[in-house]
Length: 495
Image (cartoon, rainbow, N blue to C red; front, side, top):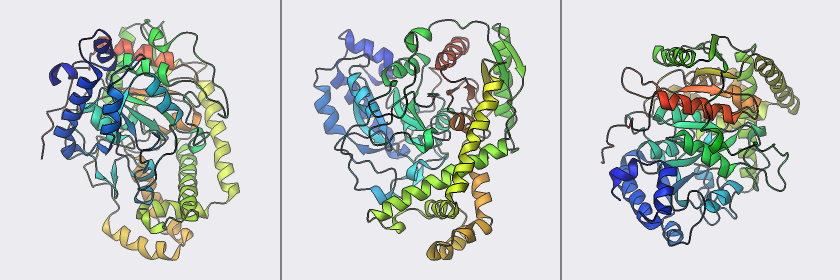
């Protein structure tokens, strides 16, 4: 098999080629490694190689629905025993995972050949992928731009043709944002659908879910069949579907009631191309026989954003504090991470609990909304991907941070106005995704209509708890109307 043929297959297709004896796992791995060697110097998507582990595994025997398919995992949560798990941070650069994460065990049981880990921003905290440890990751569609974050390395690797799909996770949009920026499918499963154990019961109070980024709906469905399910010690058990998602995804959906909105929930601008993609999708859905109308849930977007940031600040503070207690230097974390931790340190336990209780208000309001509608359609992102380096703190803000960090005065940081600026900077491009995270509901982005510059945009569907099958069915219906699989980025130049 040559690379051109490799690229024409999704993961399901490659697995079929292996099963038929047309290609071996070793040959597919070599194609993936060769592609990685050609484009990764420009992209910086794969940052922790696992080549020898993969070569030994490719010798087989391998079994499972994806036997022999090359795969990459994300450098946080998705632990592989004996391999570094740095969380994108200098602070954890020497940490080696003692055991497989449950999802990694399931990927291995499915026959995947894991040959590396992908880049993330430090602690997966940002919607772009740049870290002091590994540097900046670039978007295959435009090397001057970010692929998004925090699963930016995964999305860049899939879009560039290194692998047909890659592991990702999403605590505030980190599957869907990079998938949208890179022209991919990104399904965020509902809360508890995929076990994140054994290292954690749940990540970010259950706001984070693990999944993949990929190029086809059938891969998204088949991989959810592989990943889903609870494990011993998980905090709760989620009811399995009545049939495999791969089977459900092949069914034409019934007439659905679909609401849509193009308004940013926090009042920030939405690029015309992002709004237009939703309008065009709504028109297509109506033509396909669905009941479509403009509506949005009765949720205060600013309040939801504030509740999200309380969790975000508090979780960062807890991670940094735990690391320091274990002997890691606070200075090993990036300045903006330390700033977030300082803000988190100013929160009382009561502040945190009060903000977390609001999640129920958002979930109940969304539940009432879903009594009227089956799906909720919005832009995936509000703006095109930022240029690499543009989202870093400006020099004057970094200068202001130094004495505050040195003195550890979190309330001074809050009073400086930097917090509000950081919050707006973080969410202005990506204000739509956090709704699913705080309510725990499933959500998926699909790449339908590019912007005038030819960059991907993405439209996002949100569904009630347990309705991943509806997302996959509507995605498959739109995939048939506007096939996106062969819409590829320009050939990635090598340095």
